[in-house]
Length: 492
Image (tube, rainbow, N blue to C red; front, side):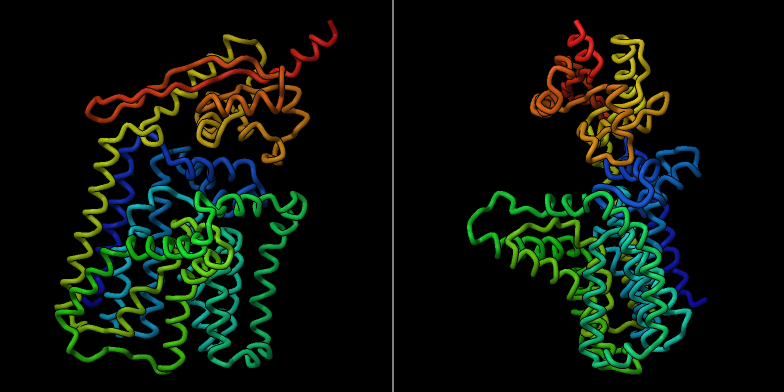
């Protein structure tokens, strides 16, 4: 194994270990991670936010390691490293060995491959699955082997079962095919239909679930991309610019690193080794530019905002594109220096994240989840002898109760059975629920929905302490949904 490739592997290992360990400074998993585990426990073929794949994999991993919170950070890094490895393999289709190493290593300068990854969610999974999908498409397209088409079909299916935004990648691949004038060639290729068939088989149960549940997850997408606070025409320009600017800022360390090495070596020749230069140009451009651009175009046309985190997987070809279109000298000495710089970036990102974990008094980082769950269980036990089986709360408190209570408690998120179709509505109505609200407004919504069946709110103070003893307190409300109390009152 060449020394440079070995050092690249050490960089992968360094990132994996660092980002698996440093987030353990948190006292509580992120909300998205907790939510994914709960989805995996209760949701078979769909959720009211996303397709089910993130739930499957997170719940499997959580149970595999004895319901360990700490193990979830390693799961995120598996997908990150998987993504980097396939970025390298894809780059190797167009670049020399050393240039491909440089292109893949540059991705560590994008926060989506470091600082954002402790929060395991659909976006982190996409960081791994998108490069795999693009790689096997390129192999299938250029070599036309059945196995590659089959793997491409499987990965399209898995991506669609993870997050619908993979449509941006599929659009970019489709535009590449159109630009390369190979539509008719692919339409005559039986192996293409094998890939399509495999994808449809994988996603069909989810499509059926969507149809049965009124396409609830699309309502979530709509609510997350509303027009925001800007109501004038300028939102059509501000939102796409805001999204694209965020992607550039999040990739700034990678861009600065590339800029430095390009400036030092820009006069030297390219190391491009692609056999089909024009086709390669089209493929790289489509995958480097179109995914993020599509989000911006949607904002431009609709006037709706796009969350910056939706760009998570969209930048997977940026390092390859830079090294392909504006190459610098990629001899062993130069790339070795670049790898050293990327080691530093990974360490700095991890240090910044660890510092945040140590200093913050944020509820999302410093919640003693088991203690909180036990405290609310005690409130229920003091109120009634009936068993506690449901909790009505927001995602944060609902999932804490579902994961850390002393017995199984089902989270009725936002106290809306229609948003939790995996639970039996009649059973929920019969057994009632403990209610938890982060503020007065939230509890008032519960009272509006269920009237006198919801008790008057009571207050509980939670404390969140950082590693230096600084404490922040938050007052939350709790109460009880007791439909039997209404029935008893009516009988009297």
